Image 1 (spheres, helix red, strand yellow):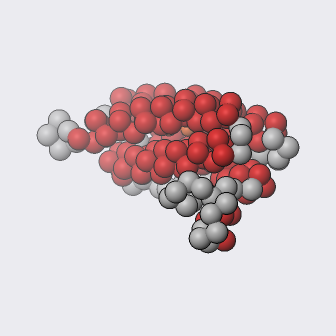
Image 2 (spheres, helix red, strand yellow):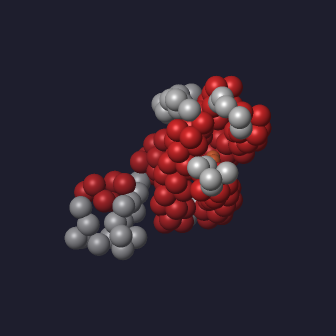
Amino acid sequence: MDKTTTLEERQTGTSESGSAQISQEKFLEALNVDLAHEYGAVIAYRTYASQVQGQWRMELRNFFEAEIPDELGHAQILADKIVALGGVPTTQASPVKQGRDAREMLRNALEDEIETIERYVLRRKQAEQLGHYGLAVEFDDLIRDESNHRDEINQILKRWDTG
Ligand SMILES: [Fe+2]
Ligand SMILES: [Fe+2]
């Protein structure tokens, strides 16, 4: 281990060199943060689908609802792996941002997808460092799915004003 890394870097595995290794315990805590956010995403998309108003309601309602099975699938992968690694999966969802209108809902969702991708890129690296190669590959699928979600929301928001 690189002696120049700080304690915090060693705990969180955030060193840019990638030489810092996270402990198994901290890794399980981090996976539970990820799981809480997947549950949060399920609640957010369900809430937005019900609340969205305006001329694009039906389209956006269908769009938000279509995300739910993906996010639930991600939660399943994470919960199964947490148990397999000897941990206890959280039953708490991360807080859900309120959206006052369709655009704010989409912006919130976009922000969350981008943040999730960043966490999964780091988590993939940490999984490899700990020798959990199968889990690292699972994160490839999660990163692909969340990137597609991000791209779709981006496309909707791009032409928001001009139609
Ligand atoms: Fe997800
Ligand atoms: Fe997503």
